[in-house]
Length: 548
Image 1 (cartoon, rainbow, N blue to C red):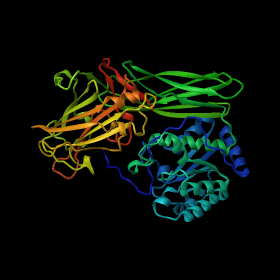
Image 2 (cartoon, one colour; image 1 turned 60 degrees about the vertical axis):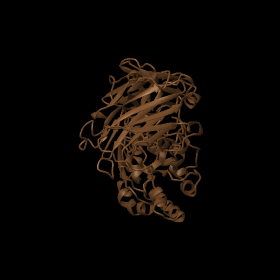
Image 3 (cartoon, rainbow, N blue to C red; image 1 turned 135 degrees about the horizontal axis):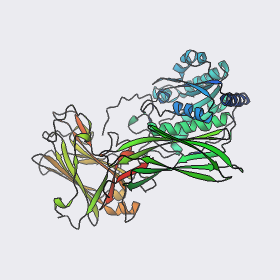
Image 4 (cartoon, rainbow, N blue to C red; image 1 turned 180 degrees about the vertical axis):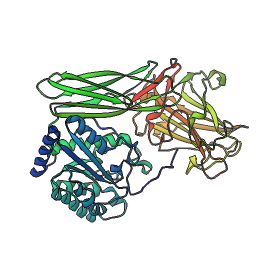
């Protein structure tokens, strides 16, 4: 696994979760003055007057840990621009990693008030807890900050309540933020609660201390959109969503589906735009009263990639003065077959072997000296009672770490997504996503040393692992009982997420190169880019396509 990202301990990290499009948080009381500001802002957006949006926050607002495009202030501003086609939206992002509410108070005059904003997103709090400030200090400073922005400007103010690293969603920090925002009379985007109420990581809300990625920033953007509706007293007349799923196909296109639903008692005219890299499709349609429609759009798919790749897809809709938004990623990944064999003694030649090549290198390519330095192959067999993963690793200098940090040395990583078809490829871990680390053997005849990155469910305790030294490196064999797989997926368990990686630490003390067969260095954080594992046959040229 890869741990070479810069981590700011005071800037909280999140996993990816998914929130149903159209879902809103419980209504809160917005002060009459703020509601009037909101309605005036809508009128200005409709008329095409210049509007300034200031996003004032910490590293979450800055977008640390994202691709730079999918950060919640940017998505929110793009939403406003599409919903109000005459609008002139100017976005100012003031995101400061590690900043507290106390620091925000010192910055507010220059970075917010002097911008003469029409709408301000205020997002602070996690760093107050992370730097050891008291809850009372946070309460006082957040109260002053929201009051300062509300009284020194005529802007609509939305309090974006910071995700908090605590198991209890009603922890004292989150509750304090909610109480202060409610007392201030501003609209609230409860980022913490929104993320927790969606799909979240079974290892906890902040595994490995990572910042929220693109998927989670989309969830945060939806919470801000709901708060904007609250601030403007808007009732949503429709919703829109991209329809996800996972399939194996050799077609040159993927049938993207967008679903729209009209909640009103009259037909509703909508304009819908779908964009993805280098292409934009826009059309108008009429939604029947109390009903909906599904748009189909064929997206081009690369022919049989050796590696997984993800394409962002955005959906925008507007009608009756309202707007909708969704974002997903289409992941196209290689597919491998598990060959059915009758017994343990099946010859290696009967399996379908896959080879690690130069394009499997995730990092350290400048240190890689060729397949003898690090390389190998793997195959998957389906025995009557278990799945068998066989790996042959070439490594001319074995340096073994320990189970406290296996990937600091020579080791194998094995990933499996055993979730249902509906949940395959979701970018968060659950108890049914398995990540194993297996050390290279230190000496002939020693028992295999391995660990699961998270506790295994009871019915998966029967996994067995063997390792063996060879002249060229080492071999690994993992046997996974089929019973727990079939309990989750049925007798026809085709379509499991799967990937395998190898790490090399020549010269001792650190890992210098890593290979992943299909996925990314972040497999241990995000299982969305796993390859697909199917029974017996994979059609020529077929790939696994997952929209998440």
